[in-house]
Length: 328
Image (cartoon, rainbow, N blue to C red; front, side):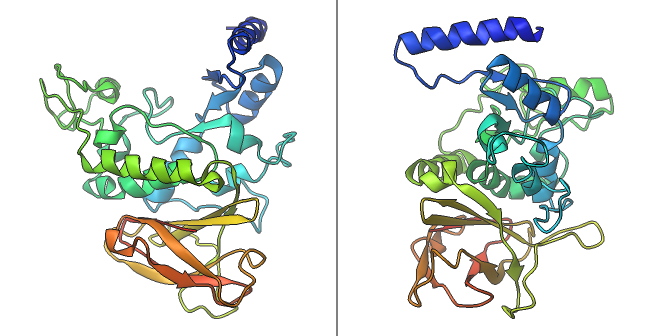
């Protein structure tokens, strides 16, 4: 559709929605041509958000798998996933949180344009399914409008390695959920929808926490420096070493004086304990603490950590192997 037709469509639909009391009806566009072009189309047509195609899914997926930088706020490059949500000024956006509010982020999708052999997040390696909760935790509690592609909540892998026919891989991105000739995991005729499955229950819990904490939905976002030692000059933004990053990635969401600290561990073998910087203004009191409101290790939930005056303010947290935690 050309922009004029899209503009007419979006205006008409928004007017109708408002006429029946729906003031915030969202229209999402699938826009090819890169992020900058998508931003221009949204501005000129009145669409509310764009699917996070281009390199957003790639940066999200492979950050969790330990093959990408999370970004570096000390530079102006858009190298990592977190860089994408802080560079609105560089991209001439009118709003410092433009990407947070107008880009739909996801792990899996039905197209994967430009990819030769296609598969879902879990389809490339046995290690990936262990990292799926970390990936979904990152997707649901970082900036952007999170979207879950059907079947990801059942850990579909979108892969059939019995054939090297790349064109056939496109079919397996559309596996049958309720029986059919090509279910996930090389199956046929299998009914997959299971509300008791581990990933489904994980999504239930994290979306509930997201709904209960406005900072996780609308808060400003800050990638956090971490330190194994806690020494003042040994806090760094995590970066790959020899092309790999199996470490803790931590970020804060801050809204109206409230901070939620989230972290994932991209190491599938080791539980990691380290110091993470937090907001020194919010945690100015000497007795300040943060409570664990979610962890993939249920034993941690409800525990608290003290905020120490290290490099301004920091907390010492433990993130399970391939895990995800949220402190408030």
